[in-house]
Length: 391
Ligand SMILES: [Zn+2]
Image (cartoon, rainbow, N blue to C red; front, top):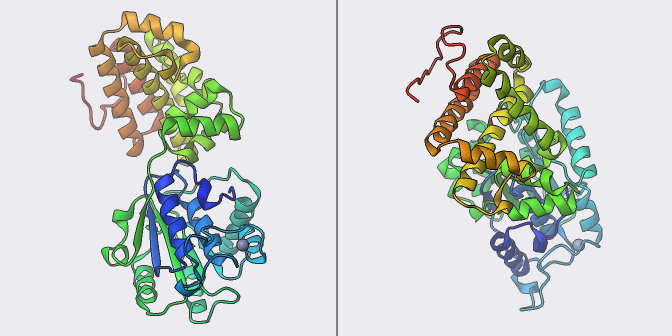
């Protein structure tokens, strides 16, 4: 994960200015809740805030702060900054959701932390069921009974704090209510409504805004070295989620887009066995299989949106699939808005099926068959659980 100072948070001028103001005053609330869409840098900001709090050169308490001249972020040079940058400061605790066996927990956490330290473009990814583990919060709460080791306060960053159990929240609530606590909690969540209201109401809320497409695209091109057309597609697919865009950069979005578009070909030819064959390639479900299947559908959506954009007279630069502009233009001449809308609805339906437990081959077969509008395969596969033949 990148070591970003508070003044350089990507695309978050409001949150950045607010947090620097807090640091410059040197007075901290017991708890902060960083909320906003996933993948916009809340954890990066939380760790930057933690480093600023622990830095030896930022004001501690109102008496020390000289108006106008107070440092408002981590200096990056003192001993505390070095330790917290390497996530090795004894007064910095960083909790995040983990999945897997309890007996592998220590190893999983250590490996993840090592990756966070090593890879400046590290993106957290975990299963639906991943959670902030009970044993880790228990250990932490025991530690909170003691004074901080080196700094004036201890900082606990909890990523995706909405992934805790009821009894963890009650324990957390008790520590939040303790007066004169030497701990600053920084919770992050893209689903703050899932946190108990009692926790939310005790946190100072800091809102993180969605990232503009241009910000994500530029980051991919300049900082990650993606080609403009790869960056454009990944950005469009990620819809303002930089974390997702970073993961997509490894997937070669253009090759994947071409593959997605090819899926429709057997359906258009009326080749039912051929369509079943390609659909079978998606039988591996699980987490990665599901994501890949979802991207296949989303890439079709992006394509159709480009066709609509052309029909609406949008500039070439607005097209996610600009590298295949001539095909887009020819489809824009051939397809009516009503037909495009029908296809988009088929795709939306497929996305919903993916969220449910419909088998992947069936989802894909039915989506492509209905996209093609040829009635292909009608009667050959079981009824769709939420069949909507009216479009
Ligand atoms: Zn420092």
